[in-house]
Length: 219
Image 1 (cartoon, helix red, strand yellow):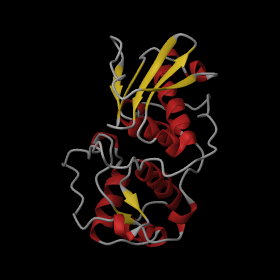
Image 2 (cartoon, rainbow, N blue to C red):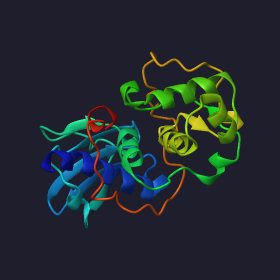
Image 3 (cartoon, one colour):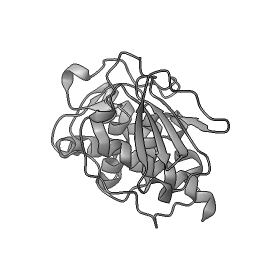
């Protein structure tokens, strides 16, 4: 459906961000298809903007131009977002298992509020964050404490991982309880970009992926 194309473009762009990984850290990039600007991505400040009419196919052969820090001025009509939101869109609507293997066996800690709007979080995600902020545990224990299906929980956890909300590294954990009414954490200019911990070989988002009404608030 034509109305779904802009969302699928964001998901496709999010997949490319994950694939490029830490190579993007601290950079400002313009994503172009020939002479047409598709997106401006500022990984120094954690901000982005995309052409609202772009389609997933526009990413085929797209060029990623590294730009100077001042080159963040947006063309009129571009839609503002963040790299974390673009990554979330891909992970949330992909049918692939994107949860890092270590999260299936190691202790999981709450880190901070996800870097996406709270309205995008499902009830199971909210329950998971509340549980982990009270006491860290592994995935098996988390399934038992929340009574949520294991595969659903793993899918949710992948989203929270890429949104920077959870970690398996104790020194990155926080002792502050999760508050779903708190605003999303915005990244400091000097804080390392941690939504993408390393390289990945993720394929593009499935072109035939369909999503009913849930897309309107999970984006």
